[in-house]
Length: 234
Ligand SMILES: [Zn+2]
Image (tube, rainbow, N blue to C red; front, side, top):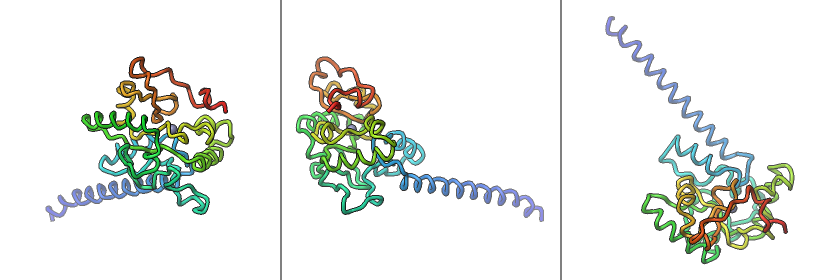
């Protein structure tokens, strides 16, 4: 009897711990489902924060893309949605600056791509990989993102702070890349200027363009957001 009495609290404790683990699993599952059905459907919202929050909870988990991934085509009309040939990064794909077969990468400006690859090769020595969340985009894909941004932000004016039109976007001309994850953007913010790679907008730490003069002079001052960029007044 005594041994049974002594063991009882242990079993109760085990059941309690089991319940905690179960509850934690359910919570994590619910969080993942929430990401999957997130109504925020624009990559520029905040990919880094979301990736960081998941990877810190589960370091070994492969994250296909930020929750704001605009490429989740399950919510789209497949007849009108842009596809991989438009520069969409396929859902679940992990694309790096070396993936030549991906149009979003292959159609980038050759000088930008060469600079990215030089930087990525050196960053790899520090254990950092440059993932591409978005690169070149077709005008159709850009317009789709803009329409989604207007829905998300409620007005064209607010959406313009985050998504350019197809006439003005540096992504459409192949002159801009959105780099993931936080390790890579941190590496670039420290070393990017040496490769001519510059962050352009304060509100977009992932958006990089080529500024060859930066190798000599450092990167130019950033715009607060794209609406302050003279190129966007088009
Ligand atoms: Zn961008």
